[in-house]
Length: 236
Image 1 (cartoon, rainbow, N blue to C red):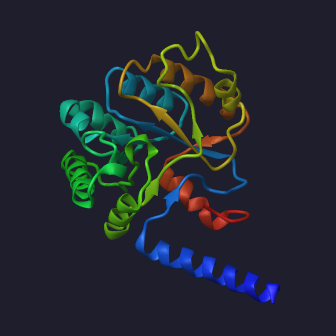
Image 2: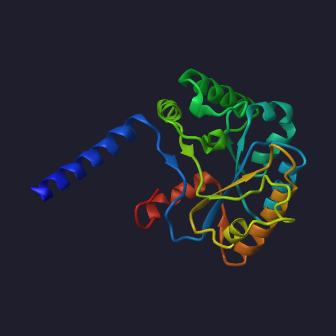
Image 3: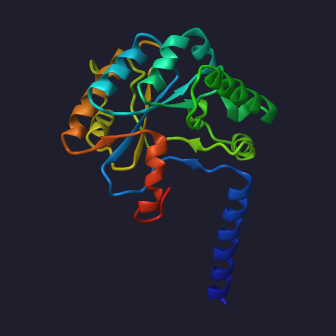
C-alpha cells in the first residue's frame, strides 16, 4: 500500500511540473556540462566608463559575455550600448527602470520588457534577447509573461559582491573563495552599472586570467545554452 501511494505521489509531482512548465517559463541558472565554458553576465548597464573598460578586457582576452541592459540606460548612453554588440557580445533585457517585478502586475511586467526590447532593436541589435529580472526575482507573474512572450528566463548560479566598492579592501572570505570555485557551465552575475563598478572591472580581469590559464572559454549565454545537448546529468 505504501509503495502504491509513493508511486502515485511521484506521478503527481511529475505531471505537476510538466503542466507548470507549459504555463510558466522556467529560469535557467546553469548548464550542466563537462566542457570548460563559462558565461559572464553583466547587469544594470550600459554605464561609462565601466562598460567600456569591461568590453576592452573581454576583447583583449578573446572573450565574450552577455550584458543585461536597462532600457533607460540604453537611451542615455546609445553609443556605449552599441559597442557591446559591435564587439561581438550578446545583449539581454533587464527591464526599463529596474523595478522589482515580483510585486508588479503582469501588464506592468510585459510593458517593461516590450519597451526595452524595442529600444534594443531600434539601436540595431539583431541577436537573441533573453530576460533577467532585477534582483533575480521570481514569481508566477514574471514566468507567465515570459512564457507568453516565448522569452528565455536567465538567472545565475554564481554571484559576487561586486557592487561593494570595498570588495578588495575588505574582502569577504566566502566571496573570494567563489572566484576559485566557478564550475563549468556557470552563469556568473556581475554588474557594469548601478554605481561605481571599478571593483567589477578588477574582478573581471582576475577571473579571465585565472580561468583562461586553465583552458576555459568565456562565451555568451546563447553559446552556453548550445551545450545543453552535450550535458551530463539533469541538464538545466
